[in-house]
Length: 509
Image (cartoon, rainbow, N blue to C red; front, top):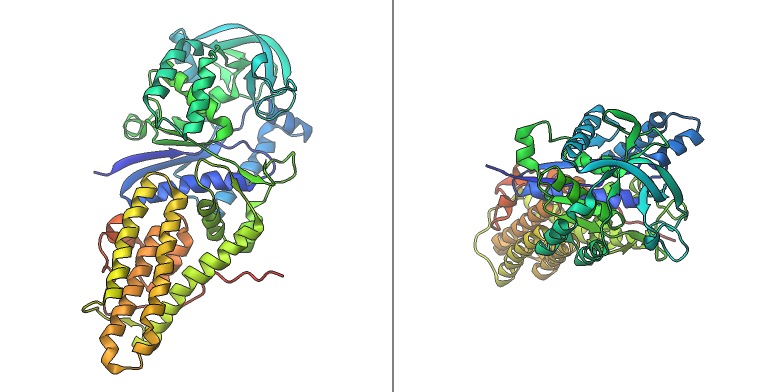
């Protein structure tokens, strides 16, 4: 029976400007999901859009539109980006959908019945851009929101509150007892310190606007957008007991570091109040920065991922983001660095390996892969590195060390290219007595390419597909981790295709 695996991205706020940060987070999640499928897991991968709140209502009004008229085309642009990036999500949740509204209202009502939600009056500070409540002590040195550093508003209104303070000791103990609950350690330490300052009860409704999910039996209140949003993670599961049992708790919530607090404190306390298991892990990834500043529309430094895909391809962008940035840390985006990676790693290393190998099999063996017999010391060295690469790759992927996994595969790509230079097949082809030695070398090269294609498939699905097509192999049969157990899985007396360019070199002035 397959093991189940559930991974989520945050549901994205529908801002008018897509940027590469959206692509980065979702590509990470997609890569992990694809790897888990490779290792024979039954995967559920969820993403979506967070569509309620005062900020969106104001944005729609400024355009003379109703909220959904404003939001729908933006959500369509997200879905188009995911299609262009080959994102293999299993469900896309919109918080404006009726299925989500029902789950949120049921969840709210359950906490009311438990006595964990009560009515009172909220007087305090609210950041509309972040949809966040703050205490005076939380503000930055200018008296602004500590996250976005924009002014906060003084708010006073009747409201419902969630007794989050009741769960302060319990969530603190859970975080301290489970070191892998919040990753990386820096985020974990931040949350521990935040809780130790004291958890207040959380205001979970608003009355000053109406774009949100109404409170059950009190529709003049709409439910706080963050209380509403995090419940999306159970919306596709909660009404299907078999599915809920199979996939909940989630294995990984992948979120940006700026929203770790909502996912590691508020959401777990809500789950505790509802008597539901907590997610196994919340992973707070870093930001993409340009000139040492986080990308944001207000700073005008956003990078359009669609334009990059149009120019360089989705797989080139995916490769760059996943290789260049260590998961959990901030990473720098640079167009020059992207071009350098394409030229060096993708065109020169991988592209040339495939092209040279297929070209030599076509030229020297009429396109037929001949069975190997015997092996040289150089052959043994290549095979040993193949085995070591697979072992290291699995350990790194299991540990979510995506950049390190790519680098270990590329070390094997480089070794395979060096193997060509060491064995010099063009010289072997001139000597009929070396025919079997030539066959051995060419077999080892196509087998290396097969293994490389399997390992890069979570990162670069389209490129892996192209390699399989040129090798004339069925990717459905190949795309399992079991196909990497031993060197020698490439079929013999098999005709390969003609080489085609994987990545053209980028010419710069």
